[in-house]
Image 1: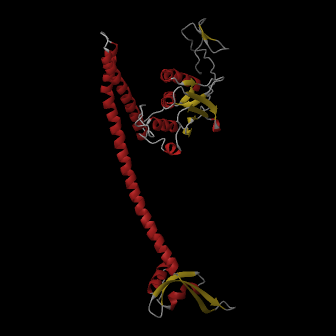
Image 2: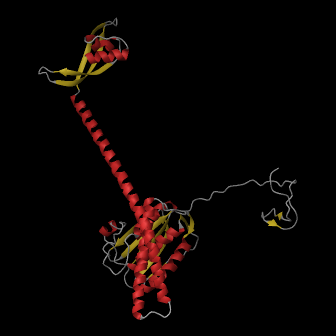
Image 3: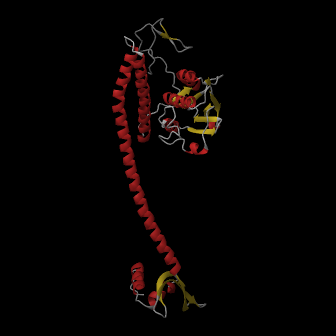
Amino acid sequence: MITRARALSAELETEITPGFEALVFKASRGIEDIYELTYIRKDDTRFPAVVSVTALRDDDNTIIGYLLIGTDNTARKRVEAERAHLDQALKIKNIELEAARATADKANQAKSEFLSSMSHELRSPLNAILGFAQLMDSGAPHPTATQKANLEQILKGGWYLLELINEILDLALIESGKLSMSMEPISLSEVLLDCQTMIEPQAQKKGIQMHFPQFTSPCFVQADRTRVKQIVVNLLSNAIKYNRVSGSVEVTCQAAAHERMHISVRDTGDGLSALQLDQLFQPFNRLGQEDSSEEGTGIGLVVSKRLVELMGGSTGAHSTVGHGSEFWIELNPPAPTRWTWMPLLRPSPRRPMPKTTTRCARCCMWKTTRPIWNWWPN
């Protein structure tokens, strides 16, 4: 009650005596008064209560008594205490998670920088090895059969290692957010023709028939031309490597939702199980092909997926065991062209051009005929 009197004195800026006056001070002046008190039971135990005090008045508005209602507030206090405890625990957990995220980001940045620097350090001497091996293979005198077989092993391993380094470098650049994209409208027919030219020798070597779409009208998407070729070549290369003997690969293009273009690569290989599809886009996971004769890095699909997402598209796969797989990407349509109209300025008669040129009023082209006036505003 003493605490109650002090709080009221500070709130109302008047001296209030502890006791009954403090209990009914607000109610006697017609002010709603609900506050908390601690009740004492007969066994001297205490419990919190919410007290509401209302003044009772007669017909002449004279106070004839007070109605005091006390409600046990133990349950609410317990809930508030539990909530405060949970809020504090959540705050601590958020701080821990933020610290863990910062640590993970720092470690990821360090990893990306390490991979990037190591990739550059490895690529330089590797290019020298490949160059010298090619010179030895094509030089005079020609290498013997044994030497040629050894050179082929050097070149095969070198190209595989270079591919691995390039893909690791791309993945590191993507994860670090430093990969730049040159987004522009590109022709799908031209890109697929380039990819067909690049991949045909590999398909012919394995006896795989390639089927590409025939475009009857121009088809454009908004993307990075180099990266789209990289993605499509990766999908085609996988479709050839993991195909059956004398199989086929079919490339299709069709319109999808939201004016996107759906590009799919379908093979006739062994297909993938549901478990393998769930692990499809995990880095360095070759889905059980680690011991096969086909070389691979296990990160080509991961890089392709990240590149498609950076270009605002999406990617996925469907597969049936024993019937083959279909990998697809969807790319956005070109951004609408914005035209800027400029006013045509009248020629100034005061500033003649020194050259004997004129401007054709119909086609806006310059012709060398006679002196004209400069096209600047007065």
